[in-house]
Length: 570
Image (tube, rainbow, N blue to C red; front, side):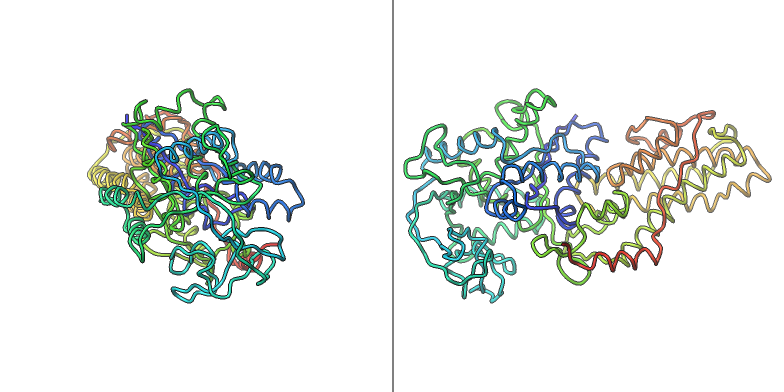
C-alpha cells in the first residue's frame, strides 16, 4: 500500500473564494486524493485557511470585527463550502493555530542558528494617509520591467518579476489610493535564499517529471536578473506569528510578526499536528519526518502558478536550510488561471462566480465536472455559461445520466428491480470488456500522472462506450426474440452502473454515491479486472431506479444566471 501526502494551496481568509481558486488547487488535489484512496492507498489530504497578514486585518476592519473573530468565522464558512463541494480533507486547519505559531518560531530559530537569517536595516514605505507601514502587496504602481500599470510592490502579476516597492513607477496605497508615501527606517529579518541557490537549483533539476509550468517559473526566479534574492520574513503588523527565535525573544524584533509567506507553508506541517489534536490520527511525524517513517511517503502539492515561487524556492529554503529531516515535496502540480466570461476572476475586484453562489444554484458535481474537465493545465482556460451548459447537458445528462436511466427503467419494465438471470456474454460483450479494460488502464495512467483533463476525457469515453454498446445491443429489441440474451445484456448494463460509480467517484462523488445506492451495493472496490468487475452484481441482486442523476440546464436558466452573475458581487 503506497502512502500519499497531498496538500493544496491554502485559501486566504479574506472572504469567500471564486471558482478559479477552487480549480487551481483544492479541487484537483481532492481528485487525486479520492483516486488514491479508491486504489486502496493510504492518504493524508490536508489544507487550512491562510489567516495572517494585512488583508485579514483590512477585511476584519471592513466587517467591523476583531481580526481573530473574523478569521474564526471565515474559517468555518470556508470549511462548510469545502464540505459542500465534497473536498475530502483529512483535516482543514488554520495557520493561526498554536501549532503553526510554535513551529514557525522553531524554524526561524534553527535557520538563524544556521546563519541563514540576517537582520537588515531598511527603509519601508509608510503611508501618511493610512497611518501605517504598507506591506509590499498594498502598494501598486507601474512595473519598471514590463510597464504593467497594476504591479504590486512584491511582484508583477503580468511578468511575474519579483519587485520592491521602491522599484514601482508612480506608487500609491491600495488601501486609501494616497500617493503621499515616504520611506522610513525599520529593521527586519531576511531569509538568506541566495545562499541556497545552488542547492535549490540541483534539487529542481532532479525533478525531471515536474510540469514545465512549475519548473519554468522556478528557474525564472532562480536565474533572472541578479538571481534568487534574500527575502524579508518579518513585517510591522499586529496580526500574525510574533517574531521569536525558537522560544526566546528576538532582540530588536519586538512588536513584529513573521511575514505571512513564511508561516503559511509551515502550516502544512502544523496542520498534521492539528489533525492529531483533533483526535483524527495519532502519529503526524510518520508523514512529515523522514527519520520517523516519512521516507516512504510521496508528497504532492497542488497550486495556482502564482504560488509556485514560494513552494519551489522559499518553503524549500526553509526545509532544506533547517538541516532537519523534514519531508520535501516530490511533485508540484501547478495550474494556469481560469478566466471568467471574457475577463478575470478576482476576489479583490468581486468579479466572477463565487463558491457559495455556485452551490446555491446547482449541486457540486455539476461544477466539479466542468471545472476538472476544463482545468487550466497547459494554458489559461475560460468559463462561459454557454460552454458550461453544453458540457453539463452533453457529458453528464446525455451520456452518463441517460445510460443509468435507460438500463434501470428497461430492466424494471421487462424483468424486475433485480439483476436478471439467464443468457451469457457473447462477442459484443467481450469486445466491450476488452475496450473498457484498455480505457480503464489509460484512465489510471492519466490519474497517476495528474493529467486532469486527459483523465476526464478518458472517463467520458468510458461512459460513451457503455452507451454505444447499449445502442448496438438494443436489449429492447433482443427481448422480443431472445429474452435470455436480453437478460445478459441488461445484467452487463447494470454492472456497468456500479463500475461507472467507482471510476467516477473522484470527479463526481455525490452522483457516484447515488449510483451505488441505487444498485444496492457498498462494493466500491477498484476494477483491477474489468471482466470480474462486470460480474460484481449477481443475478437476483436487487436495485432501485434512481431519480434523474443530472438535470439539463435550460436556455432560460443559462440566461438568468448569466445576467445574475455578470461579474460583480456586493
